[in-house]
Amino acid sequence: MLGEDGSGDPLHRLLAETTASDSACIYRAIAVSKPGGMGVSDTMDVQGPPPDSIVPAMCLAAPYDDVARQYCHGYPEVVRYAKRLLSPEFLALSLTDAIRYLQIVILSERVDSLIARKCGRAVGMEVQSMATSVLQSSHYGGDTFEMRWRELDSFLRCDGHRRTPGTTADLIAAALYLASSERMGFGATRPLVLSV
Image (cartoon, rainbow, N blue to C red; front, top):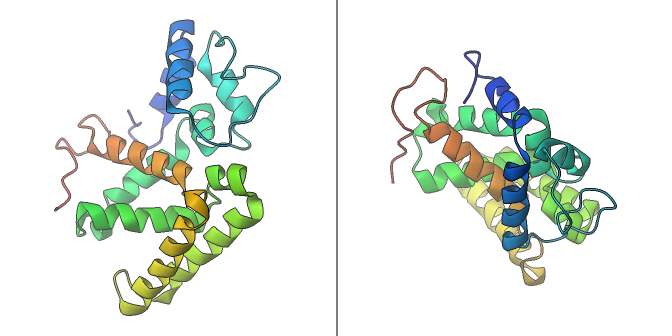
């Protein structure tokens, strides 16, 4: 699903070809998943009728929802994170460690849009700062790294789990799927195999 240059161009083209039936299925999936902090939109609200193509609806939501941003722009972050999962640094880790490490990387790079919608941008930025502190503390798995990670993990679990980085989890799931695909265009013909 990636271009020969590793870009998400084929994904972008595929999304541009979505139909009204595709939109209806995506709207139903969103309704079933009951994502937090969605709010209500005057146009193309997920509780209303789906549009003929899903891309315009996702582009409306893209400024405040990073999953919608992926639909709107051809999955740029997902492609980048999939490539990261295929790097020697990540392939040397167990699957659990690779996922945890990628979560910390993503949280350090961007405010999780679910946290921002549910708790406010300031809380999202605090999480981003804490994740950056984890990465800057020492190498992955070092004593200081683990101490900072436990502080971040505890902070995320407080407040009735309202700070759970759900958007980050969605981006990781999509990156894992893309990295595991035999048709991913990274020059690999085998699925991603991380040690367990």
